[in-house]
Length: 150
Image (cartoon, rainbow, N blue to C red; front, top):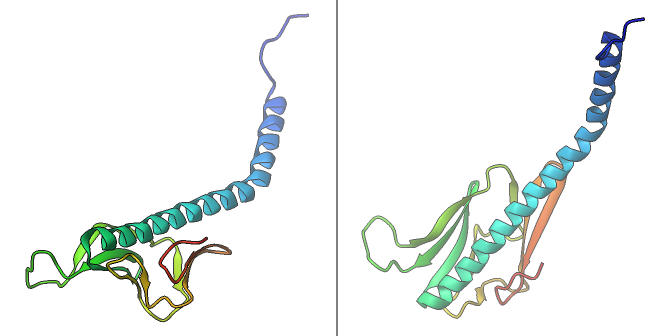
């Protein structure tokens, strides 16, 4: 009897079906892990924006704001260093695009203000910002002093 090399068509199809079933079982877990990772990345970026606003307030001795405009978070400093007649605030850093998340802030205000000492002005007991995507969510808590506590 002659020796044969390779696999038969049946063996190849069985291997493809097994790999396909394993992929179907693993896909939901991989997808959920990706969404969780994306939310953590967005949370970290938002924490960095809060820190940038607080630090800019202390370094420049100006009032800064972390302002939410639609899907964007912007750090602004007032008054403007060089007046141009177009705006009353300097943008600090890059605009943070949060388009893939739903952002909700516990208060009705659209911004978080830091006074020139770096303290959170008008925060009272604090603020909570929640980023969510589908059924997953991550939150950031800012205490009355302007520090991120969670």
